[in-house]
Length: 198
Image (cartoon, rainbow, N blue to C red; front, side, top):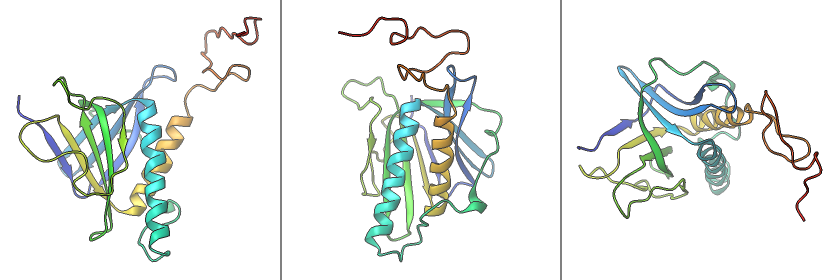
């Protein structure tokens, strides 16, 4: 099957969103440009890691430039996006690996999401690569896992990160005793019923 490569340079919109109730949510990263909409599925841990490492990358770019970079220190208010995911939500692929990079010539962040691959030896874990090489994890060869590549400004990246972290935090609240997520129906807590680990 031929490889699908989805390129957005830049997108009109790049967001993390969810479908479903807390505890049963599916996380999507969605990129949109005129006439094109791409939605890929991530794990909650991948979303959290991507957001945290993206913030770290932006902080490092800002620090290294001595404050002269176009990267803002915080998300600009005018770029905040609280709208739901665009419809229709069609899963293109599930993400197996993520990559980040900074292109100093254009002052753009590059975000790559690679599909989980069934090919032996391919990278299929939930890693987020902190590479600063614009080539990142992948190439544009006809063979290989499907790829979503997005190039965005520092301001858009800060807004993306802010929304992603808020969505991760909006899940089930943790139990005050054991730290595990609380379910609306019931919660068996090993720390409150006398079953402590020895």
